[in-house]
Length: 461
Image (cartoon, rainbow, N blue to C red; front, side, top):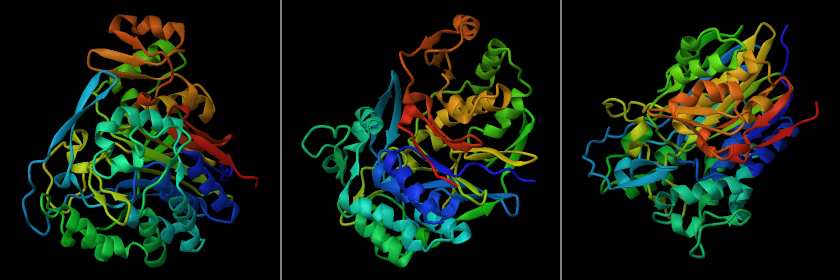
């Protein structure tokens, strides 16, 4: 017997969540809602994601009791030959941690997002494609509301985001766009209208594909052959048993979420011991990548989680299409080995589903680069070991150990602070987007991270 998740959506922006709710209200599946939310996030959450990026989806099919993973992450260009110029670089300071990024045409990888969203809808959607795309198209025509969370992020990453036409979008009056103002990307509606009317083809062998190649050809290696060869990959997820439940995820994420849970093993209710164990398995060098996440559960018990990213910023915008091209080849945190043309870059994104004998306990994903793994692991410990709801687990204070210091949020239990005090514990003044953003649905309903301005919408059965 399968126990269904409540019907609802969770996302990182109010307008993204509103799209998901409207599609579920219209009788859409979890895939319809997730696909529509991803496209809306490409309008409203462009400091984190965009149509020229990539990502991963986890889909739980209730009728088949089967979980599938769609990999639509970016691939390495070069199938058409050519040599890239050495890209320019800049350094972004993330709370005292300088991280170097490359930008420009040579950093642009082959985008997967248009193909991925189309595949997600084709595979499990039930509404007409036009209905799924229209909410994002309407928002692109009218502009979206710039959120407080995005305003805070923009202040940090402005040196990258204001490159090229980014200055017109994010600082139209010469100052950073403020919370509540309208974010507009002229031409983005044209891209979404092509996606609605012609599907993904214009992005891989049509007019947008030609514009992408033209924009990067002088200094990059991305060519028509790379775009034409792109394919979405569907596979069965890997799994690990943890705290009496089965956690399913990609299994090939760069930070090895499932392996981390396996290393963590059996943890109990001794919070100090658990905190020490978490520090032991989570400590890694600091890395940063911008991502966003959406989650949906429908009335038939299906559930979907999608995590997407554009990288930080390439500074290459397509005139007339409002598209900011990804900078994945310039993201140092993704460069962990030599890859050839056509191969997929690695990613830390790890959307997941947790199952017991009755079906999904929860579905969730996270944004935040190297903070994805610690955010999700700590949320799972709170839910599966301590019995917290997903909303309670997301709101609980987190820690993030890096070499030499343990970053932490206020509100950790006294016994945890005492246990970690000798390890250079640095407690920040408030909950912080630095610690990642988790969103998902559990058996109590949808939940989204306040650190990233998250929004939820429950739908009456």
